[in-house]
Image 1: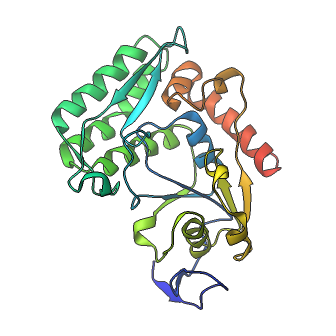
Image 2: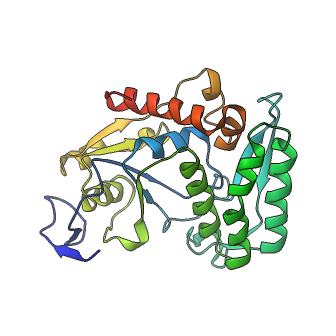
Length: 262
Protein backbone atom coordinates (compact mmCIF):
# COMPACT_ATOMS: atom_id res chain seq x y z
CA UNK A 1 0.00 0.00 0.00
CA UNK A 2 1.36 3.41 -0.95
CA UNK A 3 1.65 5.80 2.02
CA UNK A 4 0.03 9.22 1.78
CA UNK A 5 1.81 12.32 3.07
CA UNK A 6 -0.14 13.95 5.90
CA UNK A 7 0.64 16.39 8.65
CA UNK A 8 1.51 14.74 11.95
CA UNK A 9 -1.06 14.82 14.71
CA UNK A 10 -0.50 17.54 17.36
CA UNK A 11 2.42 16.80 19.71
CA UNK A 12 3.10 13.54 17.91
CA UNK A 13 6.53 12.16 17.17
CA UNK A 14 5.15 10.13 14.28
CA UNK A 15 6.58 10.66 10.82
CA UNK A 16 4.65 12.56 8.19
CA UNK A 17 3.43 9.43 6.41
CA UNK A 18 0.15 7.75 7.25
CA UNK A 19 -1.36 4.77 5.47
CA UNK A 20 -4.13 5.96 3.17
CA UNK A 21 -6.74 3.48 4.41
CA UNK A 22 -7.41 2.26 7.95
CA UNK A 23 -7.33 -1.45 8.70
CA UNK A 24 -10.16 -1.15 11.20
CA UNK A 25 -11.13 0.64 14.37
CA UNK A 26 -9.54 -1.67 16.95
CA UNK A 27 -5.79 -2.22 17.10
CA UNK A 28 -3.57 -4.58 19.10
CA UNK A 29 0.21 -4.19 19.21
CA UNK A 30 2.23 -7.09 20.55
CA UNK A 31 5.57 -8.83 20.11
CA UNK A 32 5.51 -12.09 18.14
CA UNK A 33 5.30 -14.99 20.60
CA UNK A 34 5.83 -18.69 20.12
CA UNK A 35 2.34 -20.31 20.26
CA UNK A 36 1.08 -17.38 22.38
CA UNK A 37 -0.89 -17.61 25.59
CA UNK A 38 -4.68 -17.72 25.36
CA UNK A 39 -4.91 -14.22 26.88
CA UNK A 40 -2.67 -12.85 24.12
CA UNK A 41 -4.51 -14.73 21.39
CA UNK A 42 -7.83 -13.43 22.70
CA UNK A 43 -6.60 -9.83 22.53
CA UNK A 44 -5.43 -10.30 18.95
CA UNK A 45 -8.73 -11.94 18.03
CA UNK A 46 -10.65 -9.01 19.52
CA UNK A 47 -8.68 -6.54 17.40
CA UNK A 48 -9.40 -5.73 13.77
CA UNK A 49 -5.66 -5.86 13.11
CA UNK A 50 -2.44 -6.79 14.85
CA UNK A 51 0.74 -4.74 14.55
CA UNK A 52 3.61 -7.15 15.14
CA UNK A 53 6.07 -5.27 17.37
CA UNK A 54 9.15 -6.81 15.76
CA UNK A 55 11.78 -4.06 16.05
CA UNK A 56 12.08 -3.82 19.84
CA UNK A 57 14.73 -5.50 22.00
CA UNK A 58 14.50 -9.26 22.38
CA UNK A 59 13.75 -10.38 25.97
CA UNK A 60 14.89 -13.84 27.02
CA UNK A 61 12.54 -13.98 30.01
CA UNK A 62 9.48 -13.28 27.88
CA UNK A 63 7.44 -15.51 25.54
CA UNK A 64 9.19 -14.55 22.31
CA UNK A 65 11.05 -17.87 21.98
CA UNK A 66 9.13 -20.11 24.35
CA UNK A 67 5.65 -21.30 25.31
CA UNK A 68 4.29 -23.00 28.39
CA UNK A 69 2.47 -26.22 27.54
CA UNK A 70 -0.01 -27.83 29.94
CA UNK A 71 -1.12 -31.43 30.27
CA UNK A 72 -4.60 -32.26 28.98
CA UNK A 73 -5.26 -34.20 32.18
CA UNK A 74 -3.99 -31.53 34.56
CA UNK A 75 -3.64 -27.90 33.45
CA UNK A 76 -1.49 -27.25 36.52
CA UNK A 77 1.15 -29.64 35.17
CA UNK A 78 3.18 -27.53 32.75
CA UNK A 79 6.43 -27.66 30.82
CA UNK A 80 8.31 -25.04 28.83
CA UNK A 81 8.74 -25.47 25.10
CA UNK A 82 11.79 -23.34 24.28
CA UNK A 83 13.71 -22.95 21.04
CA UNK A 84 17.40 -22.16 21.21
CA UNK A 85 18.01 -18.57 20.12
CA UNK A 86 21.20 -16.74 19.11
CA UNK A 87 21.49 -12.97 19.62
CA UNK A 88 24.09 -11.64 17.14
CA UNK A 89 24.28 -8.26 18.89
CA UNK A 90 23.99 -9.45 22.45
CA UNK A 91 21.35 -7.89 24.69
CA UNK A 92 20.71 -5.10 22.18
CA UNK A 93 19.53 -7.55 19.51
CA UNK A 94 16.02 -6.80 18.28
CA UNK A 95 13.35 -9.44 17.83
CA UNK A 96 13.87 -9.19 14.07
CA UNK A 97 17.58 -9.79 14.58
CA UNK A 98 17.27 -12.92 16.75
CA UNK A 99 18.29 -16.14 15.03
CA UNK A 100 17.55 -19.81 15.60
CA UNK A 101 20.67 -21.41 17.03
CA UNK A 102 19.95 -24.83 15.48
CA UNK A 103 16.86 -24.80 13.20
CA UNK A 104 16.83 -28.57 12.59
CA UNK A 105 16.97 -29.37 16.28
CA UNK A 106 14.39 -26.66 17.05
CA UNK A 107 11.98 -28.13 14.52
CA UNK A 108 12.34 -31.57 16.02
CA UNK A 109 11.87 -30.23 19.54
CA UNK A 110 8.68 -28.32 18.67
CA UNK A 111 7.11 -31.28 16.89
CA UNK A 112 8.02 -33.74 19.66
CA UNK A 113 6.94 -31.58 22.63
CA UNK A 114 3.57 -30.77 21.11
CA UNK A 115 2.98 -34.42 20.25
CA UNK A 116 3.99 -35.53 23.75
CA UNK A 117 1.40 -33.23 25.32
CA UNK A 118 -1.52 -33.45 22.90
CA UNK A 119 -1.39 -36.49 20.61
CA UNK A 120 -4.02 -38.32 22.70
CA UNK A 121 -6.48 -35.46 22.39
CA UNK A 122 -9.52 -35.58 20.09
CA UNK A 123 -8.41 -32.50 18.16
CA UNK A 124 -4.75 -33.39 17.69
CA UNK A 125 -4.98 -35.04 14.25
CA UNK A 126 -6.40 -31.94 12.55
CA UNK A 127 -4.05 -29.61 14.42
CA UNK A 128 -1.05 -31.72 13.46
CA UNK A 129 -1.87 -31.27 9.77
CA UNK A 130 -2.20 -27.51 10.21
CA UNK A 131 1.08 -27.44 12.11
CA UNK A 132 3.10 -28.35 9.03
CA UNK A 133 3.62 -24.73 7.79
CA UNK A 134 5.10 -23.83 11.17
CA UNK A 135 7.52 -26.75 11.07
CA UNK A 136 8.39 -25.89 7.47
CA UNK A 137 9.55 -22.41 8.60
CA UNK A 138 12.47 -24.04 10.40
CA UNK A 139 13.70 -25.31 7.04
CA UNK A 140 13.04 -22.05 5.20
CA UNK A 141 14.61 -19.53 7.58
CA UNK A 142 16.74 -19.09 10.68
CA UNK A 143 14.85 -15.95 11.78
CA UNK A 144 13.03 -16.47 15.05
CA UNK A 145 10.42 -13.85 14.20
CA UNK A 146 9.28 -15.77 11.12
CA UNK A 147 8.65 -18.93 13.12
CA UNK A 148 6.88 -17.22 16.00
CA UNK A 149 4.64 -15.13 13.75
CA UNK A 150 3.60 -18.20 11.74
CA UNK A 151 2.84 -20.05 14.99
CA UNK A 152 0.50 -17.21 15.99
CA UNK A 153 -1.06 -17.06 12.52
CA UNK A 154 -1.81 -20.78 12.83
CA UNK A 155 -3.80 -20.26 16.03
CA UNK A 156 -5.61 -17.22 14.62
CA UNK A 157 -6.52 -19.22 11.52
CA UNK A 158 -7.77 -22.09 13.66
CA UNK A 159 -10.36 -19.81 15.26
CA UNK A 160 -11.25 -17.98 12.05
CA UNK A 161 -9.87 -14.53 12.82
CA UNK A 162 -10.67 -12.25 9.84
CA UNK A 163 -8.18 -9.50 10.72
CA UNK A 164 -4.95 -8.30 9.14
CA UNK A 165 -1.33 -8.27 10.26
CA UNK A 166 1.10 -5.35 9.97
CA UNK A 167 4.66 -4.89 11.24
CA UNK A 168 6.05 -2.03 13.29
CA UNK A 169 9.32 -2.21 11.33
CA UNK A 170 7.42 -1.22 8.17
CA UNK A 171 5.78 1.86 9.71
CA UNK A 172 7.04 5.41 10.19
CA UNK A 173 6.88 5.70 13.97
CA UNK A 174 9.49 6.93 16.42
CA UNK A 175 9.64 7.57 20.15
CA UNK A 176 9.50 5.03 22.95
CA UNK A 177 6.93 3.06 24.92
CA UNK A 178 3.55 4.83 25.09
CA UNK A 179 4.36 7.47 22.47
CA UNK A 180 5.49 4.92 19.92
CA UNK A 181 2.48 2.67 20.49
CA UNK A 182 0.15 5.65 20.11
CA UNK A 183 1.89 6.70 16.90
CA UNK A 184 1.66 3.18 15.46
CA UNK A 185 -2.04 3.04 16.24
CA UNK A 186 -2.64 6.50 14.73
CA UNK A 187 -0.62 5.78 11.59
CA UNK A 188 -2.82 2.78 10.84
CA UNK A 189 -6.15 4.47 11.51
CA UNK A 190 -7.11 3.01 14.88
CA UNK A 191 -9.70 4.62 17.12
CA UNK A 192 -9.30 2.04 19.91
CA UNK A 193 -6.12 0.49 21.29
CA UNK A 194 -6.41 -2.79 23.21
CA UNK A 195 -3.96 -2.87 26.10
CA UNK A 196 -3.11 -5.97 28.12
CA UNK A 197 -2.84 -6.01 31.90
CA UNK A 198 0.95 -5.73 31.78
CA UNK A 199 0.89 -2.73 29.49
CA UNK A 200 -1.62 -0.88 31.64
CA UNK A 201 1.02 -0.65 34.38
CA UNK A 202 3.19 1.70 32.34
CA UNK A 203 1.00 3.03 29.52
CA UNK A 204 0.22 6.75 29.42
CA UNK A 205 -3.30 7.15 27.95
CA UNK A 206 -2.73 10.89 27.50
CA UNK A 207 -0.50 10.37 24.44
CA UNK A 208 -3.29 8.31 22.84
CA UNK A 209 -5.86 11.01 23.56
CA UNK A 210 -3.77 13.41 21.46
CA UNK A 211 -4.65 11.17 18.53
CA UNK A 212 -8.29 10.72 19.68
CA UNK A 213 -7.61 7.05 20.37
CA UNK A 214 -9.33 5.30 23.28
CA UNK A 215 -7.23 2.94 25.41
CA UNK A 216 -9.25 -0.12 26.37
CA UNK A 217 -7.96 -2.37 29.14
CA UNK A 218 -8.20 -5.99 28.02
CA UNK A 219 -8.69 -8.78 30.55
CA UNK A 220 -9.79 -12.37 30.22
CA UNK A 221 -12.14 -14.37 32.51
CA UNK A 222 -10.69 -16.60 35.20
CA UNK A 223 -12.75 -19.79 34.86
CA UNK A 224 -13.25 -22.60 32.35
CA UNK A 225 -10.71 -22.58 29.53
CA UNK A 226 -9.58 -19.16 30.77
CA UNK A 227 -8.28 -20.42 34.14
CA UNK A 228 -4.68 -20.59 32.90
CA UNK A 229 -5.04 -18.14 30.01
CA UNK A 230 -2.32 -15.78 31.24
CA UNK A 231 0.32 -18.49 31.68
CA UNK A 232 -0.32 -21.35 29.24
CA UNK A 233 -0.20 -21.47 25.44
CA UNK A 234 -3.53 -21.23 23.63
CA UNK A 235 -2.73 -24.63 22.09
CA UNK A 236 -3.87 -26.15 25.38
CA UNK A 237 -7.37 -24.68 25.20
CA UNK A 238 -7.60 -25.51 21.50
CA UNK A 239 -6.81 -29.16 22.22
CA UNK A 240 -9.33 -29.25 25.08
CA UNK A 241 -12.39 -27.85 23.35
CA UNK A 242 -11.56 -27.66 19.63
CA UNK A 243 -11.56 -24.69 17.26
CA UNK A 244 -15.34 -24.20 16.97
CA UNK A 245 -15.96 -23.99 20.72
CA UNK A 246 -12.89 -21.85 21.20
CA UNK A 247 -14.04 -19.43 18.52
CA UNK A 248 -17.40 -19.11 20.28
CA UNK A 249 -15.64 -18.28 23.54
CA UNK A 250 -13.46 -15.69 21.82
CA UNK A 251 -16.44 -14.06 20.07
CA UNK A 252 -18.34 -13.82 23.35
CA UNK A 253 -15.34 -12.19 25.02
CA UNK A 254 -14.91 -9.78 22.11
CA UNK A 255 -18.55 -8.78 22.42
CA UNK A 256 -18.13 -8.07 26.13
CA UNK A 257 -14.92 -6.11 25.71
CA UNK A 258 -16.20 -3.98 22.83
CA UNK A 259 -19.79 -3.96 24.15
CA UNK A 260 -21.23 -5.35 20.99
CA UNK A 261 -23.25 -8.42 20.04
CA UNK A 262 -20.89 -11.44 19.73
